[in-house]
Length: 109
Image (cartoon, rainbow, N blue to C red):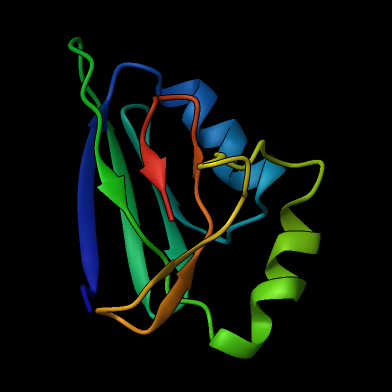
């Protein structure tokens, strides 16, 4: 598990609104060119860039909290669909997964 992640975005204001207002992550720090949120035991920092960049990252949710997480996300994000299902199972990880995209086009699981 990562303790701190830094990502670059050309949509800093949209990303800040999304993570703070839509997903209600706690704000750790904010400057003119960056902001940091707390996601569980990790921090996620977005820094302004003139160029677009996309990433794929995940937040770990306890397996017995999948229904609660999906209900909480309902109306906040549009879950990605695969084979007309909004969740998938990965046998190699013995894990269920739901995913969506943020305003920067990042894949969030």
